[in-house]
Length: 100
Figure (cartoon, helix red, strand yellow):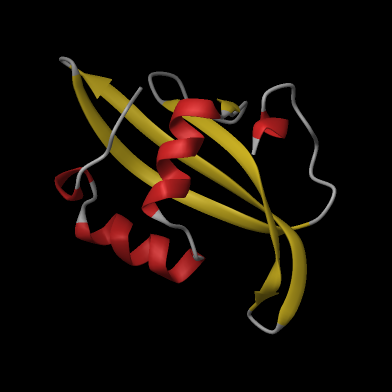
C-alpha cells in the first residue's frame, strides 16, 4: 500500500489538484485500489477510479468523479507525474471500483 506524504506532491501537482477538485485521499485510493488506465504511456503507470460525487462542480451537478493518477517508479522512488479528474455520470465500470 502506497502512503503519500506532502513531499510527494510537487507544487505544480498541488495546484492542478486544487484546480481539478482532487484530494490527497482520492489520489492514494486511486493508486492503491484503482484499475490500470489504458492511456498510460510506456514506462508510466496510470491508475483510475470512479468516486460517487453527487455535488456541483463549476456550476453543474455531477453524480460521479473519475480520478486518474499517473506516476513513475525510478530506483524504488515513487514519482507522481500528474492527476486528472472528469466529472459526469455512468462512467465505464471495471471490476474493482465498486468498493468505494
